[in-house]
Image (tube, rainbow, N blue to C red):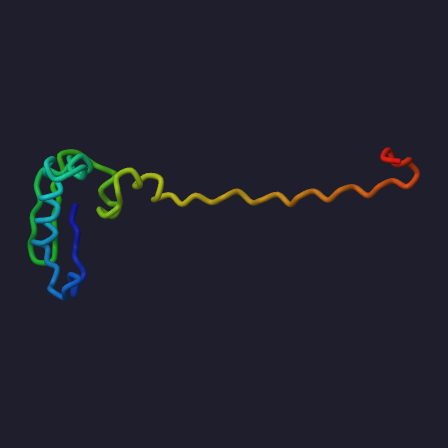
Length: 106
């Protein structure tokens, strides 16, 4: 899988974001000692950075990787498909009282 960085990407401090920075971050996240991200990146065998491109060589196909890596793994499936609430039914209007029937409250 090849990721191409847009030109002009910057960190919050204004320094340039490079393919090497992305590689370093992904390599760090793949280490089990650094948190829960390693499981969601387990299908990556190697990462190569060159110019503005990061290449992820995979052990096997992984349909979760094209989604933004910043998404938490628990959110990938549910957040990627927006849910739409069903339309609300209008509250039924009460039927008008039939004047020929005596009111039971009397």
